[in-house]
Length: 256
Image (cartoon, rainbow, N blue to C red; front, side, top):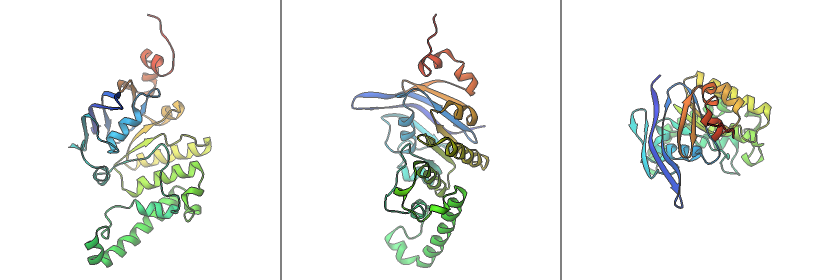
């Protein structure tokens, strides 16, 4: 499989403290790639730089053969590069349905003149978005809470809304930042099933996850970050057998 996304020598820090120190890796199209590493390894920082939450201090990000390093986040989403957040985000007073509608793409009424000149087209597109939002809600088993404000949902349901938001953007790749964190085991298994199904439909996935049993089940390959750069890459069995990974990530020391 060819690489859909490539990161080359990515560097970034905060308040003079380096976090990414030359991270370089590639995400294969069609794969579920695990991105793991100890706390502070730079995983979420890498995802933020890739998705355009902030611009890296140095390095290059390429998606589908195009340099997107300096592109605004909205343009990356339009290209099909979408991400979820570790802490589910949203507008507390909006309903699940409104959240899903909010992330529909290419609405002809988003601009002032378009809203005046494309009234009928806008209404048709609004109806299409509404149908898509209902379909996504049914898929994620959120249809029974679709009119509830997001603030009234459980933590696991908020994670499902994050997945739904990503789906409304018609993604080619989704970057998931700990989608199972803080979720009960039953719902974690359900989220895992959704990820497998999305991947089977052709969506490339990058998954940050601390639950190693989930990484072993879902991910191939697995990339290990440590101290802001790639340490190693391979199957789950290969990376957990690596003495460097055991020491840096699992806390196991090996005598020389």
